Every structure is written in C-alpha cells, then in structure tokens.
Length: 475
Image (tube, rainbow, N blue to C red; front, side):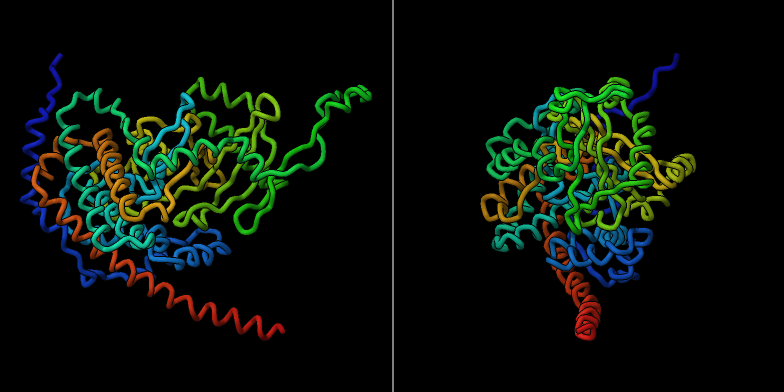
C-alpha cells in the first residue's frame, strides 16, 4: 500500500510565509467604507427574512441600544465588509461570531466547568483572520462601552493579537495530540474569568427550574388505571411545574405546537452518541416554551423543553434553536470546489453548528445535537447548564487587558485544533506587523460600527414617531 503523503509542518510553515505575497501583513490594517456596494441597513433587512415578524422590531431595538449591541447583531454586515478585503486564503474552522461575550463557562461531559468559545451559529470554514479581526474589534467596542480609555482599548487589541500569534507558534511545534488535549490552567487566576466561573457555579439546572417555571396543578404519581386513590397515595402527589410566561422573552406553549416540538426530539436523539441517547431516554418531557435569546438570533425560532429524570430534583432543559446558513456563506461559496460545494448545499445547518463546535472546543455539551421541524433546521443543546459569560462592566482597564489575553489564547487554540497552526504561524511571523495591522483595523472598524449604529438608530425614529402618533390618536 502506498504511504499517504503528508506535507511536513516545516513545509506548511513556509507555505504560510509565502501567503504574504497574496496579502502583506500590514495591509490588514486598511479599512474604508468606500468599497461598499450594499448599505448595512439593506444587509440587515435581508438577514431578517423568514424570521418571526413580531420579533424583528425587538432585534432592531436591542441593536439600537449601543454600538456593541449593534455589533453583536450585525454579523451579516461585517461578513460582507470582510469579503471586500483581500485575504490570506489560509482557511480554518471559524467561530464566525468571535466577540468577548461569546466566550464563557459551561459544564463539560464530566461535570467540571469548562471555559471556551461557546457560540457557533455562524461557524464556517473561511480565512482565519476574519475571526481575529472580529474579536479584536469587539475588544475595542466592549472597552468603550465599559468606559475604558482609548489607550487601554488599543493595548487590549495588541495583547490579544500578540497572545494569538505567540500561542500559534507554540501549537505549531506541539504534537497533534498535544494540541488536541491542550488546556489553559491559569484561568482561575484571571479576575474577569474567575468571576464568570463563580456565576457559572450558581447557574444549575435547579436554579433554572426555579427561575423559568412555576407550580401549576398536581402530578398524580401514585394513581393507576382502575385503582381508586387512597389517602396515602394522595399524600405523595406533588405540584406540577410548568414554564412561566415572561414577556417578551418566554412564552409557554401548549397544544399542537408543543407536541411538534416534543416530537422533534425523536430525530434529535438519533444525532447523539449511543450512550447519551440512553441517558436522554430516561427523561420525560414535562413542558414547552418559546424563548427569545441573544441579539443576532432574535427572530429565529427558539424553543425550550423542560424534562424530568429521576424525580423532581433531576430537571433537564433542552434548547431547540433554529439555525440558518452562516452569514459568511455567500462569500466563501465561490472558493469551494465542486464536490464540497454540492455537499454544502445539502448540509443540515444544525449539524454544521455541531461539527464546528466539536472541532474547535476542547469539550462540548454532552447533549449537543440537531433536529428538523417543518423544513427548518435546528441545533439542540442544554439550556443554562452552568453557563455564564463576561459582563461589560468588568472590562475596564486592567480587566480588559487580562481578558484580552485569554481571548487570544482561546481563539488560537480553537484555530489550531480545527485548522493548520503551522501555516498560520508562518504567515503571522514573530514580529508585531500582523498585530499592529489588526489593531489598526479594529479601531477603524469600531469607528465604522458606531457610524452604522447611528444610521440604524436614525432609521428607527420614524417608526417610533408613528407609534407615538397612534397612541395619541387612541387617547
């Protein structure tokens, strides 16, 4: 049998250096809105087609709250803008929506808390620097939102890219399995991360049960068909818990829609590994609700199912979240080869997210899977199982700098796991040329984001004026 030819790490490192001829590192710092042929407002409008109409306005309101809020919901705009720039052609699995609040804590398969990138709705294989530029921009915007000085914002992007670059060189020298198993052990000593981990410890399934549900009626645990209930059997009946309705974020569902959501768990179970399918089978669905989540995802269909396992103190909450094509998909399709393009056209969007998440994360949610309802693709995962993320007020000065270093290391690990660390290391090099350029881009694009945010706010004023007039007329 012929031995499969594998290009060595040294050769791939040289390939990465040669990509500088395609785009010089300093050219990553260039940004101008003059190359745009589409308006941001138009791109955002197109991205909301097919969403729940009543929630589209809520999405705009969340984005209008601040430049950082706008940035979170404007992935389609940044994806378009990045596509206008030259790129390295060094592709890896992207998070796609790399920003400071998409790193966080969650419970791993062994029950211990994990800190990692934890949102992959936009994941796709594309140029590695798109993730780097988005994360760097988010540090500037988050720092500004927290009241950090411009100097600290610039220092945070410099530290982020420096950590990303140096860690990529470290990963390029490791064995394949060392990269696959690499853990960051110093997280407990980073104050913003330590705070996230403390919040995550409190975000238990029982806490979610008490927060999202309420008592209603009784569950007759002792009754059997044809057997009259006795005084002792009634004594072990207990209150039934159902979802609260908390407008506009949570609405309990009943009837045919609730049955359809529960029915989708059959297909979902098939996406799980056999032993996890066995664990899921020991839970029974108790109630269903519609939930509004995030900023970019608002308007997409999102359901939560409350299940119960071994008694009232064993709740499981599953989130069934609609997934559409990544905002980057239109801009990478042309680079795909025939077979890969054909495969992508028929891919399940929920499975795309699962595959991207498993590729980049050290450990993933044990109940991560996918399903389909009415021709729409969905991701399924646990809801709020020890999940927590950074609060912007914690990103002032020293906290911003500490957190920036963690962001660089986490993103580098994800890219090294799912991509080619040797080629990326060869491209970014050992000088600060790449760092300086990304920092310059981040500051320019943060300024652009603020301009685009103001345009969104301005476009919403006529809508608010019409609402005010209607209210006055009703009086």
